[in-house]
Amino acid sequence: MSVTASDQVASFAGAVAEGRVGDRLWLYATYHCNLTCSYCLTESHPRIADRRALDPALMVQSVRDASALGFRSVGITGGEVFMLPSFPRTLVAIAQILPTIALSNGMLFTDRVLDELVLLAGLDCAIQLSLDSHDPVANDRFRGPGCFDHVVAAIPRLRERGIRVRVATTVVDVDANLDALCTLHRSLGVPDEDHIVRSVVRRGRAVSEDLGFDLEDGATLPELTLTADGSFLHPFAPTVHDGVIDTDLRISDRVGPLHEALAAFLSHEQTQLRGSDVVRNVR
Ligand SMILES: C[S@@+](CC[C@H](N)C(=O)[O-])C[C@H]1O[C@@H](n2cnc3c(N)ncnc32)[C@H](O)[C@@H]1O
Ligand code: SF4
Image (tube, rainbow, N blue to C red; front, side, top):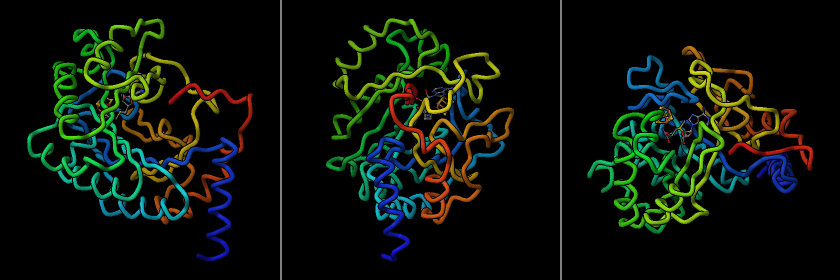
């Protein structure tokens, strides 16, 4: 490794140790989706004009590079990652390199997909399914018909294949009582540490639907995020509004090489924030 590369590894490790940035690399695999959720950050939907997919080989190579640069985990999101027919194989390849979480709406677990995902058993990989309420009607109001039933059916089918499942809850009403939802996820074998809850952020379709709250500077931990439109500050940054990508939190219009994206990331003013004056309340 060159002196410059080892300097960059040390700078990144220092920023992680100081809590200024996270050690996770995020990949936006595609913006295409089978659903049209009312609050969707990425305005994803079935007939989207620009799917903004990342090449699978580029995703795997980026994760190899990330491992060499000191990243310790990977998050993969979209859009709906399982809209990509090759995604199960890409996920297995990535999870063989670094601990991985893949975010999914849980609608597309056909027998073919589940058979391919069996290779995840024994790897440090979780599939994080979106479930907003214990009540099917309330859940499906924002996410779409049949969503609740699919997610509740998918959890045991994944778990019985040895695949870890997490649950993500996106709340429109910040005062909603989630006790019954927690009872449900526990009954499905998902422990509290694998349940994350976040409020709707007012970006993407949430702006058009007048939902959620504005994302304040520092509210979310900077984590280098790669998309087909370049590199971004964190996974709530590469949003789409009226069909156009938001570039306010873009750090580079290039995706690679990863060390260049990391250099741009580490010089961004928001990766300098630290200490008790920074409230990280969005995840
Ligand atoms: C954009 S989705 C992509 C993955 C997958 N399609 C899904 O819905 O789980 C990732 C997560 O972001 C959440 N999300 C979508 N729009 C949001 C918004 N405006 N604010 C906060 N979270 C949002 C979704 O509920 C989901 O849990
Ligand atoms: S939140 Fe996920 S499932 Fe819903 S439209 Fe957006 S990408 Fe699709």
